[in-house]
Image 1: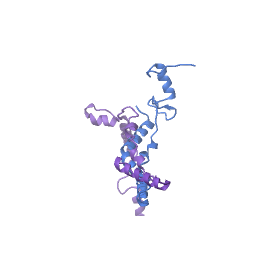
Image 2: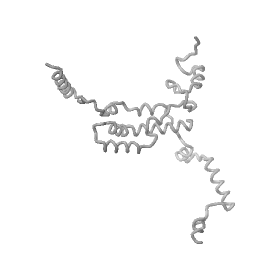
Image 3: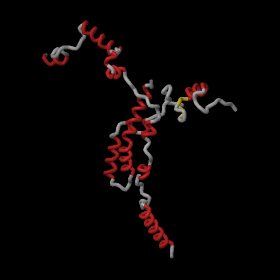
Image 4: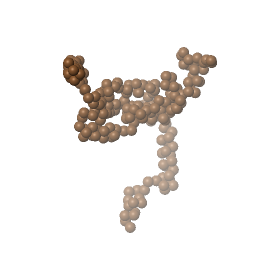
Length: 100
Length: 106
């Protein structure tokens, strides 16, 4: 069962994905300096009208096991301790303990 | 051929090549925001971070299969509490008996 923060993040991801195309179009309008200032300002207003979750910055990679938001290894999508636990159990293919 | 002439010739050449290869001629380097249009869409990648989890609430299960006669414990407790409150006279007031309507009458 996913944790509450994961559910929140899932929601944000869905919002980002669904509004991405329209948002990028407005972002293009605001960034295009050859367009009239009025158009660009209106596009900026439209951008501001999007929900907070529509920004890609609203999403945050979380640990699949625990939902922890910090110290998450991107490749394994696990927090550092869950990574250690799983690696020692041999659940992560190709990962083995080493010392040097 | 002096430097200025060479410059204009190069600019013309650039313009011509842009028209041939379908590029945008932008000698002053204005910010056109084309990099935003060029960027790939990140939505699919972003959506595929978590494994496909379908959140099913207990209420949805009982709605999908009413013949199972599942008991929603939280809802049951809530209704029981409501009945208890009503027995003690703490239920919702009847229409026209609430705080607001009595205030207006005075």
